[in-house]
Image (tube, rainbow, N blue to C red):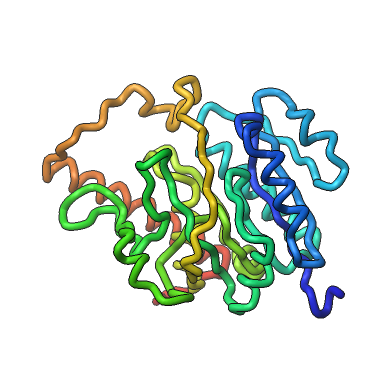
Length: 277
């Protein structure tokens, strides 16, 4: 079975904030048609979530949450990556617990024979949703703040599997070679940017490509930001202006350049990048 069906680990960070959907999530996994996968969930609740801890068919992993949600998520996702590597899994199907994909998800994504490939996810609540697809890694576009997001119009023009700069880690199949190359999730105190962005940057820097199957999976997010959990400890009380001066924008770009320089330096130390690349 393993020769024809490589081992896959399905997993995600979770918490009791997902109590509204966890039963539906697990029931959907029970209907998966792929014959060789395991499930691991990292509980980041304030207190141990007994509802999933006592389940016999999943690997329960525990992480005490920090005030910085990005720091918590980065650590939780990296715990799962270590679990994949130590458990000799060939693929990691990152599947957030508010995401309900089709039953044949694993074999469908695996059939593309790509190192990183995922379904179309959306972010936001209610009608305020946008595709989680990035056209480039630019943090500043046309002199304005904001990532280079694909629009729904861009998505509608896609005809099947499409190469993109990056797509959501909410339903993403990743081959272990990506992790063996040292690609991980990170959090930086310098920018209030999600831990997934750094995974995307490192994967691209290491020469891996993101591919998107534009099939829209069900994404039922009802989690609202928790004011008691600061996104970034040092900027929790800072009010972000709607307009930014050129001087301030230049300073932010320079800080980003330093971050990227440090990132490239770390990748070179790990042997992922070589001088001159």
